[in-house]
Each structure stands twice: as structure tokens, then as C-alpha cells.
Amino acid sequence: MNVADRPYRLSFPVALALAWVGVAPWLLYGLGVTVAWPAIPHSIVMAQGFVGTAAAGFLLTMLPRRTASAPPSAGLAVACAVLPALTSFAALAGWPAASQLPWLAFLATLFRFSSRRLWTARAARRAPDAFIWIPLALLMALAGTVCFALYGALHLDFRWHRLAQLLSVQGLVFGLVIGVGSLALPLMTRGEGPPDAAQGRIGPRLAHVACAIALVASFVIEAFVLPRAGQGLRGALLLGVLLGTARIHRRPTRPGLVRRLMHVAGWLLPLGLLAAAIDPSRANVFSHATYLAGAGLLVLAVAANVALGHGPTPSRADAAPTAAWLLGALCLAAFVARALAFVDGTHLREWLAIAASLFLAATLAWLWLCASSLRGAAPRSSAQAAGPPGHSR
Image 1 (cartoon, helix red, strand yellow):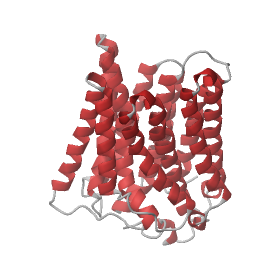
Image 2 (cartoon, rainbow, N blue to C red; image 1 turned 180 degrees about the horizontal axis):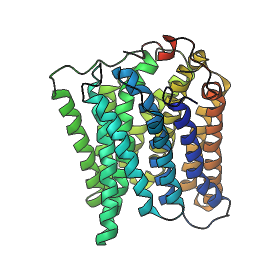
Image 3 (tube, rainbow, N blue to C red; image 1 turned 45 degrees about the vertical axis):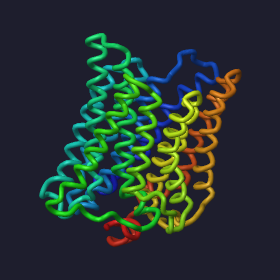
Image 4 (cartoon, rainbow, N blue to C red; image 1 turned 60 degrees about the vertical axis):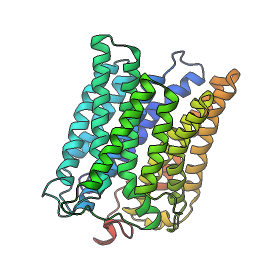
């Protein structure tokens, strides 16, 4: 396997395996096999393992092509798959503090890879302004890890633990969604690649930095002041940035069900947060619209588009195969079942088991959809291997 040429062929399967690792505890809890509420290890595995590894696969594949720079080494690609896996298994073993050591190594590795292609002369092209969110997301995740360490070492108020969770999970996920989505959503759904950053103009990037600071402020407000206000600010911020950078108000013009799933997921991310702020009594229900039906579906749909676009059957991205229908339907059904777990508390365990089973089935639909792209078939030609139309814009 040539992981340096197509890193997603390693990262995406590892990400799906970690999704199973992260969701399986809910299935076991729902079936009555375990009794411990697995929320903390689940959040670590899904955010740092599943999302982190999938994002690494996308960045290692896309950044060199977008900036016309050198591809990652095979060792770096392997490290970006192995380190989040070590983090995930350490978290499940009951060592949340130790789990952050490989995570710190992962952040440093991906930050170095990204920054050398975004900000140095090694890149032949300048990346879009919104790509500044990629290193900012990694820095927010690092700040969350530091907060975890301070909370444990100094026995701080539990609100610091909440802040650490928000930075490590939502800071990472939302930062990557904005950074990656600014290119992936308009390019893959409408064929509209964002322009390169203008030479010498730092104003747009400073505006993105200011939005990132506002995102961090929403975490502080939620943890220390008023959860509802923090969620509302975060939802409005996420919606505004996605409208401005990814222009999600524009309907997809390129064919393919996977691209429409991306568009739907892009809307569910901010709307779930806004709904949670409007109706705090159902915050747990609406938060899963953001995480499961929003972020989870978006990660799977973007990964499918990348894999299909670089594989031997790119036409599957322009169609509506059964596997794509199953992927979307199972993710949305998993969200409904997860929501019913909070609405119908008398059958909590049953609904949790159903939701976990449906999401795991969605990952199998993804494998069915993208199997030919993961087997290592040779690219069709040098021009076609670069990706779908508009990929190099």
C-alpha cells in the first residue's frame, strides 16, 4: 500500500475502526453487558480517534495537492493513523491522562505538516484564507489537553474539566469542519473552489482568527457563566462562518447523493447548537443533531467523496447507489434513536443499543460504497488521479 501517495487508504479505514471502538461501549451498555456510563471515553475516542484520524487522512491527501507541495512521507502517514489509535485505546483502558500523550504527538505532527504547507515557501500555491482554521483547531485541542492536565494536577473546579472537554472535542471538530469545509463543501457539492489567499493581505485571516477567539469565548461562557448563552453564540458563529466560507445556503449543483448528504450535514451542525440554546430542556437531543447527524455524517460523506474521487470508480460519487442511501438513512436513523433515548427514558438502554447498532451499520455502508477505492487500484491517469473536476482549484 502506497500510503504516501494516497494517505486516505490507511487513515479512513483506521478512522472507521476507531468509530467501532468508540460506539461499541454504548452498544454493550445498552445490551446490559456493562454498567458504567461510557460518556468520557466515548467522547475521546470519537473526537480524537474517529474525527482526528479522518481529518488527518483528508489533510494529508488534500493539502499537498491544493498547495502543490510535497506529499507526506509514509512514516508520517502511519504515525497520523497510529497515534490517535493509541489515544483511543488508552482512554478505553481507563487512562484518560495517559491517553493525551500520543494525542499531543499527533497534534504536533499534523501541525508541523500543515504549517509547512500553509505558511512557507515550500508550497507553490497559497492556501485559501479559511485554512487558518486547521492549525487553530489543533491549537484549541492542545489547549483542551492543557486544561485537563491543570484540572487534575491542581484539583481545580469541575468547570475547568468542562472547558477542557469543550476545547478538546468541539474546538477540534468545529475548527476542522470550518477549515476543511471551506474547501470541501463548495468544491465537492458545486465545483466552486475557494480562491487562494492574496499575497500580502492578512485582513481575511485575521478575521478568521477573531472568529476562532469568539469560538473559544463561547466555551468559556458555557463552562463558567451560562451554558445556553455559550451554545447560542457558538451556533450563530458556526452558521455565520459556514455561510460565509462554504456558502451552504447554495444548493448542490453537482450530481450525487453523497454530495447532498454533505450539504444536509453542513446545516445540521449549527442548527443543532442553536436549537439546544433555544430549548435547553432538550439540549441532549439537539446536541446529537450536531454531533451524530451533523459531524458524523459530514465526516463519512466527505471521506466517501475523497475516496471515490481518487479511486477507480469516481462515477459512483455522481450517482445514488444503494450504499449511499443506506449511509444517509442509517446515520439519520441513529440520531432519531439516540434522541428517543432521552425522550423515552424508560427504555433508555434499548434506544442506546439501537442507536449504536444503526451508526455502526452506517460505517459498513460506507465500506460497501468505497471498497474499490480502498483496495489500491491504480489511478486512472495522472490527470484523473488529481481528483474530481475542480479539485486543483
